[in-house]
Amino acid sequence: MTTIKLHNTWTRQKDVFEPIDAQNVRMYVCGPTVYDRAHLGNARPVVVFDTLFRLLREVYGAGHVTYARNFTDVDDKINARSAESGRPIGDITAQTTQWFLDDMGELGALEPNHMPRATAYIAEMVDMIGVLMERGHAYAAEGHVLFAVDSWKKEYGKLSGRSVDDMIAGARVEVAPYKKNPMDFVLWKPSTGDQPGWESPWGFGRPGWHIECSAMSQALLGKDFDIHGGGNDLIFPHHENEIAQSRCANPDHRFARYWLHNEMLQVEGKKMSKSLGNFFTVRDLLDQGIPGEVIRFVFLQTHYRKPMDWTEEKAKQSEATLRKWRALTAGVEPAATAAAAVLEALADDLNTAGAVAELHKLAASGEAASLLASAQLMGLLTPALGAWAEAPSMELTPFADRLAAAREAAMVSKDFGEVDRLKAAFVEAGLEVRMSKSGVELVPTTGFDAAKLEALA
Ligand SMILES: [Zn+2]
Image (cartoon, rainbow, N blue to C red; front, side):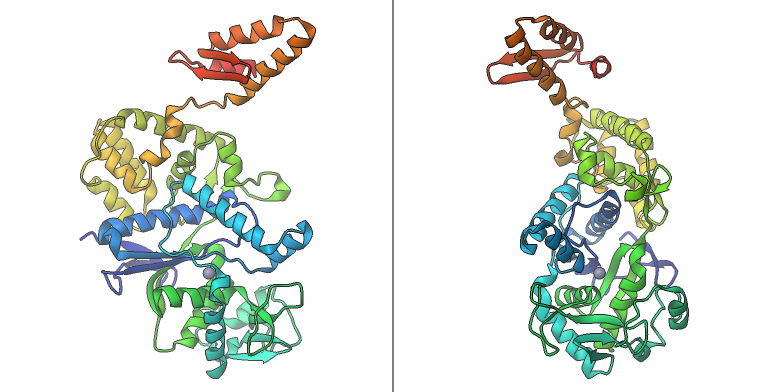
């Protein structure tokens, strides 16, 4: 069996991956808070852990891997979005959840086996908070329940490599008069009338964010499981707090064994932010005509533990490469197994950049069947993602709309000069022009030349 090595944030080294039960390898990854479209940075962990999921399925068998990723559907950001838009919370979370699944599906991400919504696990969270209180790790104060980090001081901070005192000095902690230690974090907080809430032993309220992952991973994967993943922005405080909650609630268990964190994403060398004007969603890119497969391929060319720089140039090159590979593998049956070198690279702490280098070698030597099987192991060159490569790479609708508008104007002016000029230019660019009462349709012929069309834009 292939030996997988993974860099474990907990041990700060590359460890040989030994699952607790090879018949049921279990992975939990923190999912999105559903109040808006996923931006490009949100998509990186999805692609990274989807690739790991595929590797685990390859090595242990598809039926022997369980992957859970949550949806946070109770959160103050969602409440704020509802208040400012006047839309019911349930509408916002349902729509955003579907957007997320659609957008990530376009990136070739398989759906996890479990996709729990936080609001469906409130009872489990309340139970866990109760256990933490019984064991002296949590206390109630002014309608809140807080985790007492002093009760876990020896271990708290181990994942992120900081002591509690360092954290207090360095962190922007929310100071509240009811906290015994400024690092204590919220397990439960009170809700007022218009906020979502549930009855609990501590009054009407709602859970803090961290407790949901502890409660849901335990319910779905057990008190011990193999891999816990997420972006490295979650190491502290989110994952540190998850560990504190789960280990204190279940002192005889170890919670997750391997902690994996992906680095962040940049755009053209800069941090993506709304203030820099380089902030965009996955859907924005898809709407610009950048295929989801291209986005996935760009991501995979950088190792997950390095910052990923999204550039237009990379997207262009990746599109050209995939187009070439798709042409090379058209009508070819994938080989029975992926190339050994590709599997080896992936098994070495998910070295996707190395695996892509191997794909290039296979393409260069014309090994189409092996290229296809190996790329498909990484979620590339799959039939489901291929429609874009068959269609012309340009969005034709704006050109069709322009001709339709010219025709409408000509009906009034009786001057068909512009209509004739556009028609001739489209034919010259290799398009068949179909005009009917219902509208204008442009169909690319084999002589389609995108550059000529672009010159008209
Ligand atoms: Zn989480």
